[in-house]
Length: 252
Image 1 (cartoon, one colour):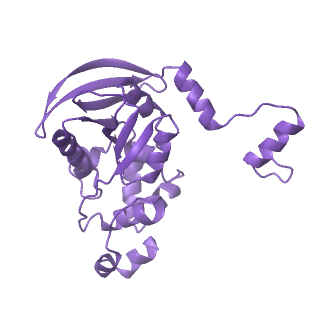
Image 2 (cartoon, helix red, strand yellow):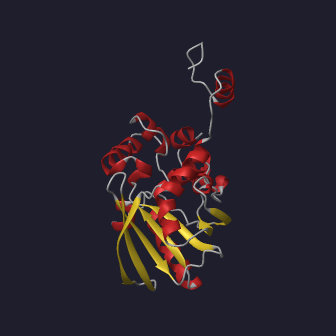
Image 3 (cartoon, one colour):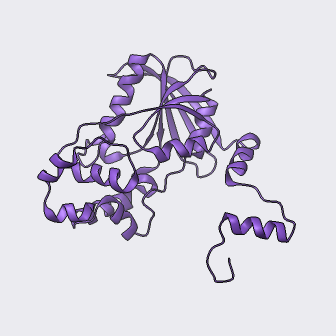
């Protein structure tokens, strides 16, 4: 803490380290060290997975941190010297399983599998971090708040969470275990690019995976673009014609 009670930031920490002759490292350095020295995942089983999109291999991993199980769906041989088409997909029970129209999760997951099948090589990493990390219970509470006029970011904050609590450390270790070192990442979220880069994976290209909106998720997608920085090609002029003044006020 600084003398005025505020949190000390990096420049302040450098001054403290110099004053008391202390060593200082960055979070990135710490992450790199732990990745090299610790293995936080366990590979449980792998088998073939024929699907409507094509034939894949499914690999089940378990996190040693919280015992959550995560899935990697792979196609073809992974060459660590070449960029691999990768989708890091966070679990969405309502969208992925039940086809909820509130989000674009299921369509993105299916499109990822189609793209990998067409490419004959790639990985879909299915991470068990429902609701951008807040869990199913709180995600449904957030849905209820959205029905009362909040957007997806406001709902998370009202419930006491940050807009996005997802972590990519375990996912990065799974990708490294599969042999991935370079990737063409299928995402509209630039923060996901930054998150994986921090764990020593090189992202050579961001591959957009945009899905056509529907009347039930237009506000949600616009909020992701405006407040979470997602790179979505939403036609704001046409979009604004479709939503009410109350909804527009919430977005802005």
